[in-house]
Image (cartoon, rainbow, N blue to C red; front, side, top):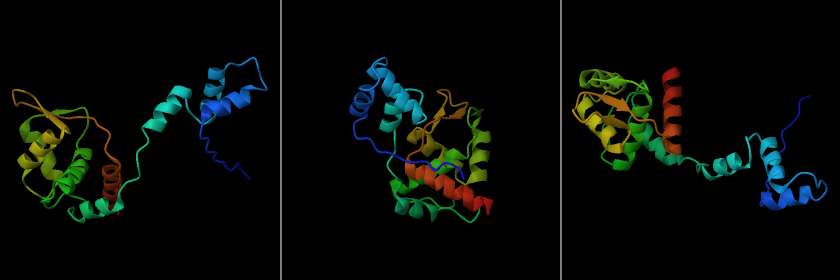
Length: 168
């Protein structure tokens, strides 16, 4: 029988480290904080603190369900939502299907967008992606590139749901 993980919530890690340190004087307070963080799977206490601050709230499943209605059975963006919030969420799913670290000419990016959408209005999608900061356009208009960003929780859940839809 394997080990079962036991989760512990510690309200004040600093006070916990002081209490642990009381029985072992050779190690300093920071060393104990680092040991605790390493035991939790982090590089050090600073890494644990940064990860805790970056934790996202759970995704709003109602928003994801509303956005899923705008995609067809093959997972392609099929209709243009009137509501900006829904449209932005849907555009994250289009962004996720663009290859990263590649620069495209206008015709090539339009062909890629037409492949992942059923709208047949690549220019509108392209402009919206640029306006949202998900894609950049060269100043001379010769090329486009996907900008790497962390999607919000709802967008990550929408992307996952569409991936499951396309796999089945």
